Length: 292
Image (cartoon, rainbow, N blue to C red):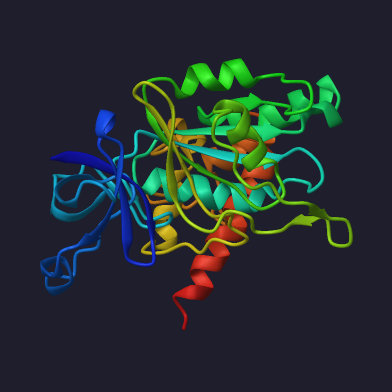
C-alpha cells in the first residue's frame, strides 16, 4: 500500500493512505543500516501489521523530487516564509538568510508579512520595495481582519509548501485560518521580550484541500550559511543578475571594488539599500567563517 508521511515523531511515522486513513508506522531496520531516514513528505510503500489499530511498517521510500535539510522535508514545490510587520519587528537579515538558503536549493519562495493591520499603506509599500525588485512574491495578511488570506490560499493551491518563520509572527494562527479543521497550538506572545514561545515542535504535513499541502516547521531564530563561498553569495541575490559581467573587474563581488555596476545601481535607487546592506553583512560573515 502507498501513502505519504505526514508526521514523524520519535521514530514513529504517520502515513496518510487516502481513504484508508492514517497508519502509525516504524521504519524497517534496513533504513538504519543504509543510514537513510524517512522524511515528512516522503511518498512510501508500507505494509499493514494490524488493521484494527492502524499499525504498519514503512517498507520503501519512493524517489524524492527534492530534499531540504532545514527544515528536513521532502517533495516540496515552494517555500512560504512568514514574518510579522510588527510585534516582533521583522529581521530582514534573517529573512535574507532564508532566501539565500532557498535560492541554493532552487526552491521558489513567497514572502508573507502578517499583522498588516498594524501598519499604514505607505509602510506596506516600503516593505514591498525591498523584495519585489528581486522577483519575490510578497503577500500581506492579517489574521485579525482576514485581509490577504484568500490571496494566500490561491497561491498555495495545488502545491506542497513548506512554511517557516520565527516565533511570534502568527504562523500557527495563519495555518489555522487556511485549514480550520486543524487547530494548531498557538502561543502567547511574551510581553517582556516581545518574542513568541516555540509552539511548533515538529514538521507536519497538513492537508489544506485536494492536492494542496503545507508543511508547518519549527520556528527559527537564527540561520547559518552553509556550504557557500563568499564569492558565490552574489549569485543568490536575484536583483544583482542584470549587472553581472558589467562591472570593471571580472568576478566583482560588489563590495569594495571600484566601478562596480551593482553599487552604481544602488546609488541610482535600482537596488534596495536594506538588501545591499544585508548582502555586505553576510559576505563579511562568510569571509570570517573561512578564516577559522
